[in-house]
Amino acid sequence: MAERRRAKRVVLKMSGEALASPESGEPIDAAIVERIAREIVDARAELDLELAVMIGGGNIWRGSTGAGAGMDRATSDTMGMLGTVINALALQDALERQCQPTRVLTAIHMAEVAEPYIRRRAIRHLEKGRVVLFAAGMGNPYFTTDTSAALRAAEIEADLLYKGTHGGVDGVYSADPRVDPTATRFEEISFMDVVSKDLRALDLTAITFCKDNGLPILVFDLTPPGNLRRALSGERIGTLVR
Ligand code: UDP
Image (cartoon, rainbow, N blue to C red):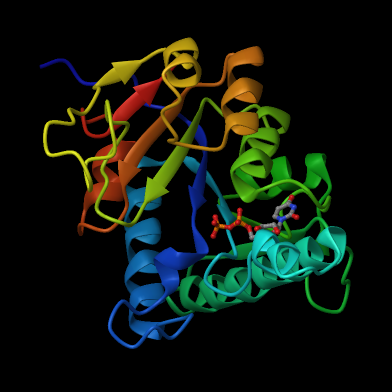
C-alpha cells in the first residue's frame, strides 16, 4: 500500500493522560515521559522534520470537572491551562536529558518559567531544530488543547496535525470500539463525515477549525513503541481526517 505524504513541519497533540501511570494513577510517570521523549527525539532526528508538541492537562485538571462542581468556569479552565505547563516542563526535562534542545512557549505569560508564545519565534525555534512545546493551550478559558493545537498548527503553517491517543483507540471508528465490537476503523474520513456522524476523534471546535483551514489531522495511537515514528514517516496507521 502506498505511503502517505510525509510532512515537514508538524504539531503533535498529546493528552496529559498520556504521561500518567496506568498502574499507580500518578499524574506524571517519569518512565513514561522518558519513553515518549525518546520517541520524539528519535523520530525527529531520523525523519528530519520540524516538530512542535501541544500538551494537554487532563491528567492534572480539567476545567469541566471544577465547573461541574460549581466552580467558576474561567477559573477552573485556568487551572487546567496551568496543568499543561507542569506537563510541558516534565516533557522538556526529559527531552533535554536526551540532548534535544527544547523551548516551552506559554500562552499565559510566566517569564520566569518559559518564553511567551510568539508565532515568529516558534517558527524560528523549529527552523533551528528545537522541539517547541506549546503550553497553557491558547490562553483562553472555554477551549481545549485540541483546539489550541489546531490553532497553533495553522499559525505556524504546519502540514499536518497529529493527534496521539493513548486509551487503546488507534484512530477514528464508526462507533466506540470499547463499547461496540462491530466498530470499524476508518483509514481516511472527511471532516464533514466526522461532524455529521458525530465521531469524537477531537473536539468539534478543533475539527471545524481544521476543516475551515484545510489542515489535515492524523489520529493514531501514541502508546505502542515506534508508533510515533510510523505515523510521522507516512505509514498507513491510524485515521487521516481531511
Ligand atoms: N484549557 C483552556 N483553554 C485552552 C486549553 C486548555 O481553558 O486553550 C483548559 C481546559 O479546562 C481543559 C484543561 O485546560 O480541560 C486541560 O486541557 P485538555 O482537557 O485539552 O487536556 P487533555 O484532555 O488533552 O489532557
